[in-house]
Length: 198
Image (cartoon, rainbow, N blue to C red; front, side, top):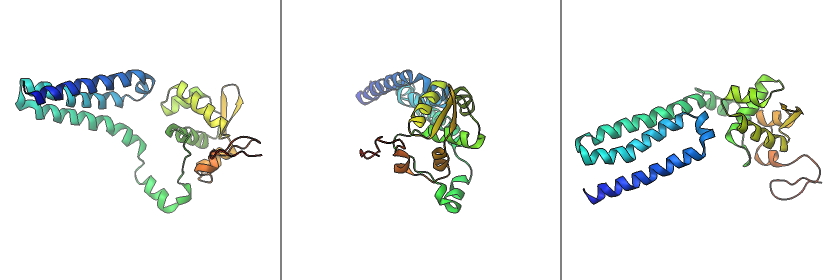
């Protein structure tokens, strides 16, 4: 066996084991984002199967790499296709630049999805309903709602029921940006820059 091929195979196995371990640790995310499994299968096929095939049938290595590339592209197509609105982002940027939001550092990408659902529904919603409509786990939604409530972006109406606040509406409509969302409204709470509001 060529030492270079052996090294590539060993590194591929090591990288593959690391990827599988990370996916195992984040199984809640993987359960709701199946495309990660397809992308991972493509990456593993490229790194491990490509080198294994090179040992056995070198003429087929490009076929294996091609199939692996197709798996990666197929896996990445779904989230990109779902998150892109044809022409929407460009139209919004050109026609309504104020509505382009700059989220603060504490916000997660799913927070915008949650807030847009509240804004469009204009209803009191439960974590289960939000999770069902946005294809997130209920646990993820509960964590994000607690964080959003702590920053006065949503409020708990009663146990397990939430609605968007006026501040949340301002954020969705582009009226609050980055630092303005970080500032707490309650007296004595800390701001993002470490100072306190009195």
